[in-house]
Length: 395
View 1 (cartoon, helix red, strand yellow):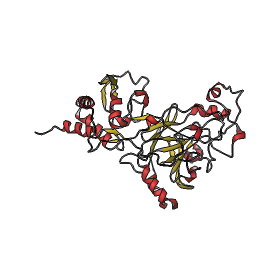
View 2: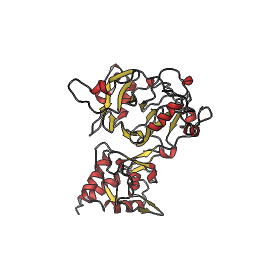
View 3: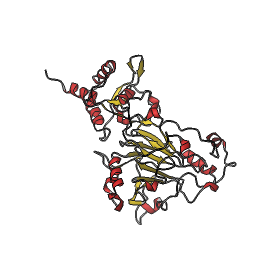
């Protein structure tokens, strides 16, 4: 008996579902000495948020009959074109751009609990432990991004690669922080110390990028729009390629991507590019990450199959010499720069704690390898592959 194309797509999707792993798959295979505590100088998403998942493939795990029944019931309500978009997104693991897959908003019941349709698809094809909508963040590529009330429409996008997991909340600052976070929020401009610097990051390795007028004002031409950040790619201490100016609201930084544009690190090379650890790390960059400028700040979404590590002035402990490096597992997002917090921190920073010149608008991101007090690499210049994001704020 011949199966219909729709049935074939449904079966392909069911086979591509994820299953919880018992071990860690190398998403952060660098040698960490701690469990992600900020006191140790490193911070990561909570343990329950970092359980990696993998496709079931040809294995035969214990299937939940009710989950399978509900999944088939949901998928059979989609049109063939929607199923094709879903298959494209799932089988490429987000590498191919795919449109929204709209589904009626009423929640789906699984046993004694109900889940939103988009939570169900994320549970099936991305994170086996996701439970609630508040654990997810809509990406800019989704039509529902930026809606004032995204829960008010009759349908919801169920493309699992239009969502990212949010990293868990940070731990409270330890006793050695000069200003607890609550006191920081209460400080008035009169009480604060005027300073243009923030502590906790290493000095910038080169002067700030040229101003917008240097980049775009040419004789006889009209002024072009301003870039909101510039990106530099480094291998150890060697700068590779030119500064990459970003004008669009989001940009992909990747080594290889089936479809899409942005800053392709795979096209760049230097004398360091042939080093064994650089070659290994380059292969792990894969789809890389996406930076997006949003109303509340700058976000980084880890699209690769390995963890990324982030240090930012607005993620550091205020007025402390301790360097905080956040570990971001695959599929997770974090706000790497908060504009409002940056302005507040620059008013309250203590210049006596600074070890040298430094850029309060610079964010460092290392691929697959961490650095700082919890790692064998004490400085980011010891990491094989990393980028510096230079935000164009008051430059």
